[in-house]
Image (cartoon, rainbow, N blue to C red):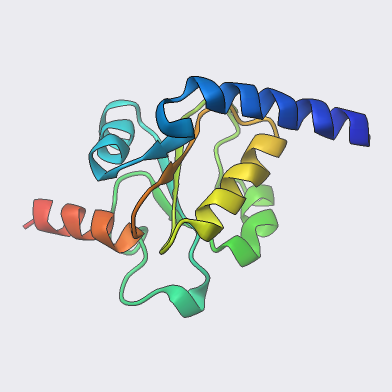
Length: 133
């Protein structure tokens, strides 16, 4: 892929993000709707050193995968990230930094429906843990 192709992909991603409410940032309620109603994949991208307790996959959050940002390429190549580039994906971490970076990676790869959880993913995990009790 040439630099021109990469720039075109980034330009398209920016235009797509402009159409999303809040540029693709979602709160816990919106994330749950995407996961439960739209079948979104949840990517917990916290590096291992930032995970306190269970990651989203271990906590049995629906459609969740623990894909640390430091291992993004490995998980992409292993198929833990949907092949369908129009499928919704919610990315979460502790303070949005790694989630935003991962959103950029996915959009550079041509994904169209990527959203970032606007709070600590532990909060979303706790909602699901409380729901299963």
